[in-house]
Image (tube, rainbow, N blue to C red; front, side, top):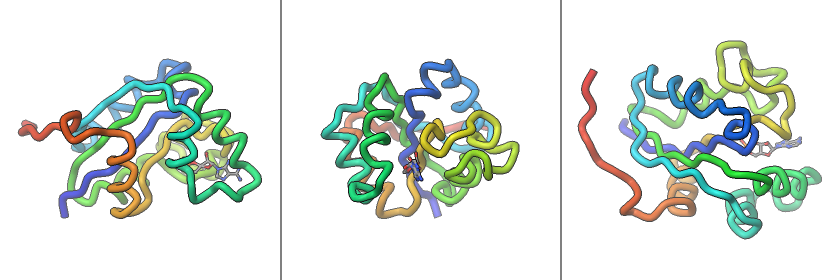
Length: 144
Ligand code: CMP
């Protein structure tokens, strides 16, 4: 089934100049970027995005980290893309993430795991609406 997922390169991915390398992994796999935005996440947006973690001990550190410098938000479209993207991204703890995944190849700490990807169709819809207006999301044909 064709799905849309919300994917965000976190501040360290941007500041470490990994944007191009990470985007290539999704494009080379055959997925389509239909929205892209560099933005500074503020505390309110961070709290909304990570609302389900607000009672966790790592929450304030997570908000400090995600608001520390610009992030790159994307909407990616493709067949079963939510689970395909989770595989490309790798496990939440980068030390456990398989080599060949983005987290496995580029990160070491769970608190600095360089990328976020929606974990379900309902969170994808919620997160896409939180970060993007409908006129920022594009519908266009891709060629192979
Ligand atoms: P993400 O996929 O963006 O979703 C929730 C985030 O919370 C997760 O990536 C991590 O960055 C962070 N997180 C989850 N568990 C921990 C933890 N035990 N310690 C620090 N950060 C965590």
